[in-house]
Length: 399
Image (tube, rainbow, N blue to C red):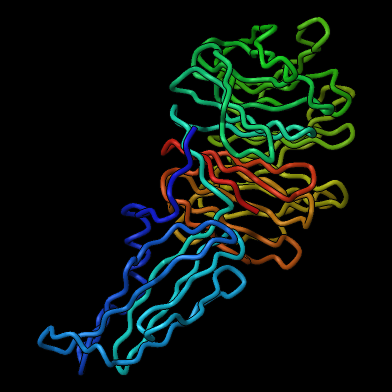
């Protein structure tokens, strides 16, 4: 698969964000224009940003000086280049910020988004997972395939033909098997990661959506549109438990002997005892809860809420103790970077954004304006690279 060139127009959503931030050309003694005004820059790469200054009649002012400033130098650095009419941008860390140019009373700004790289993948990438050995999988629902890149290679060079509308993908603990929800086939496809082949099928009741391999690799949890969550023994494919959720379940999290399940339409999160297969508690969250994250330690459960926030549920008290609004709305998929504990939250159609959140504070610390429709997110075990599946037919590699 080919890589997209570094300079890319980021679409209407990005342009709208740019226009809402920039003041545009000055109406006083001169005006200024930057080129390009929307930039995709790879980490470690450089790009020239050029400014032109004009008087009110449209005549160029070649001697007019221009200064440049990055609003976030942790993401993008600027350095002057010869002639004083432009700057050299350097991508430092995945994220989005503005670079502002000024000349007298005139000002203009360019939106710069930095990623590690972007790989084109046809088939509307949706689900995402990375194995302990660095096999990066994304589901391609409209191509009925599972695409693979083997890190540190960021090109998706192989794929597996699957059933109808593969949506989610998850690995077992050791990374030897991948489990893919073939939504319209009402089944789970089992993929041998070593050979890259589809080796088994697990039938389910209803259209399978989200999957979770429980700690220990013996039980597979599956949500379907049958308003239930199923526990399936992988050795025999037998359903060992079916728990009614009251509404279609969308998100999973697991730790030790507990599993948490979100219901988007029900506005709830269910706490399941994975030993007794009983629902311990039902938390009424409100909104449209989607992806769930439970850290390795502590009493917190993080909830991506499509109503436009990330919520922290205190498991000891059963109450929501913090709510972080997501500007522009959304809150679909979420992944935790194991290296630093930061949460990465995609917004899908709402703002074409991945928000980076520090749950300890809790605050938004960074924004990555991906464009397109960002969906599932996954990180490798070391937390050095993450992938964002995007329905606009690409995958962003971030950190």
